[in-house]
Every structure is written in structure tokens, then in C-alpha cells.
Amino acid sequence: MNTSPTLLPALVRPAVKDRRWLSSDHCAGPVFDLLDALGWAIVDTPEANVHATSPDGRVYVGWLPEDTTAWKRDIVWQVRVQPTEGDPWGQEFGLYTPAEAVAGFIAALVAHR
Image (cartoon, rainbow, N blue to C red; front, top):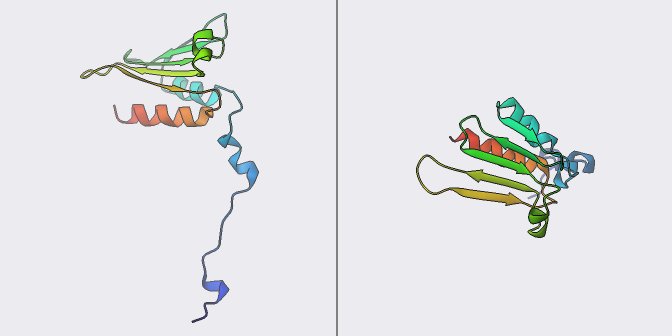
């Protein structure tokens, strides 16, 4: 059986410029824009690290580009969670993790609280 090419679904390939977010530009903007919109307390240090805390104080997000301890572990993002029930936990993201991916993680985290 032959199928007409006009009946087949079109193959869609996003242009490379549409996938630029797949590689990090080392910009924290997408994360802190989200946290600012959510009303989080955001503090930057003279060393250029940034710390944010959720309004209820149970979630911390740190952007640590100048923290030597974090660099030794190859991370720049740190998320720590203190649930109302259960043990505290954390997630870290490396230098090459796009900020959009970290923002997506945080958005999903706070959406289910």
C-alpha cells in the first residue's frame, strides 16, 4: 500500500536557536525572576552568591557561583527543603545545568506544596 506524502504528519524540527536554553549561559535570571514573582526573600552577598527563602521558610535556594565549597563539589545551585513531616532533603545542580531547568524544578516543587 502506498501512502500519499500529503497524508503523513509533518516532521517538525525546532530550529537550533529555539533550543538555546539546553545549554547554560550561567545566568541565574530565570530562577530569581520566578522566586521574586512568588514573593520569596532574596539576598545577595558581596561575594556575588544569592540566597532565597520561601515565604514559609521551609525551602531554601542558593546560587553559589563564588562559593569554593560548592565549586569543589561541582555545583552552583543548591535547594534545601524542610517538610512539615518527614526528613529534610536537598537537591544540587551543576555549573552546566541551565537556569531554566532549575526554575522548572523549583516551579514543580512549589506547585505541589
